[in-house]
Length: 319
Image (cartoon, rainbow, N blue to C red; front, side):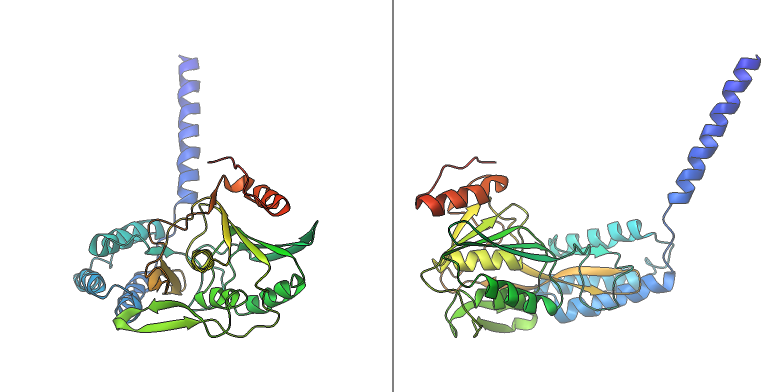
């Protein structure tokens, strides 16, 4: 009997500790006012900038009805609100690009990433004067254009250039446009960008210091994680016959996304632009950028070096 009591007490103690741990990790509810303000701002942002107007009208109608009927007046943890908002938006638009996130701890800016990966631009010159440029993480602010200029200047004397995008994260469209200007003659059309309310903009290459010479062979290394603005770079240079793509097919996000802070603890990612290539009259949406030489991303740099040094395509290990 005594043994049974000890076991029972121990079980109760374990249960109490487990319950206490669960209570400690439970999400703190968001303030009701913050939730309603964030939803109101989201409605205005969709009306102003969401690229799909008809779908946007449906989303606005759904959110407005829910807001007016008090659906957002309850107690919401971030996780519960994320599920509710994203499911409402996807159901209304059939667009999975919407993403609610917590920008806590980041600068109070309107444009930011849901999960900011520290950015880096790495360069080195490999044997036989092969330049290597790796884009890593998110390059979100204006300083990265200067960093990119410094990197490109350091590789300007290379006989061949490898651009490694395998771990590239989010970047603004303007940075990709600037980067492409190193490879495409000044004043040449890069793409047509479509925005909300039928606004269109022709993206042109512009003058840069020390553009890459036409005789320099360019190779872009890709992975299944390359998305958005860096897919724009790979797709454009591939179809301009200015670069050979080596690696894995990219993710296939032909819509450019941007992020905005809706409140202190809430931010949203949304599609705001679509890119159309002037040569193909299409983009990489859904299909991704298909490499010229398909191989596992982890093998792509080695395969590219073999191609450059032997001047012939090499067999790669496929995924």
